[in-house]
Image: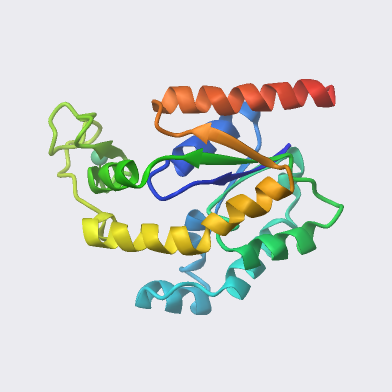
Length: 215
Ligand SMILES: [Zn+2]
């Protein structure tokens, strides 16, 4: 079982990918995590991340290619953050050919306004916890429920940066939706629902798909 998650920033891809990986015992392949990891030893990736430049497709594709060679992906995976451009999607098709089959592409859809609202209300703690101030997940609002440290806002979550991220998404990632729809792989998920409900929609599909495969 191999899946791809698509959706604008703020759609909750990372959260959903983690839940899917855990429930269905497959590997969570997050390019964000991979970049952060690679930053430590890969000079090329480090250079892009430090300057804030967009990592070129070839570099990302190479990273994914290497990752897909590892044995653990045989139990299945969920891709989060890749592919992000049409170019990357075509590269993925080429690299997996007939050896790996993507079962479905989940498109978690949220409106532009909702994406902005969610991201700009996100606060993070250095311990890894994250909160939405609008939803008031932390009882103490400005302090972390787990460790008590002050919460802060990630630089790329600030409103003007968020608008840039969404513009990039509209331009680069939206064509992917058409691409996978034409390939009859796209499964639309209503991302405006609560996190648990979004996960239920995805789980239901995966369960059905598993049953169909007779596993
Ligand atoms: Zn904390």
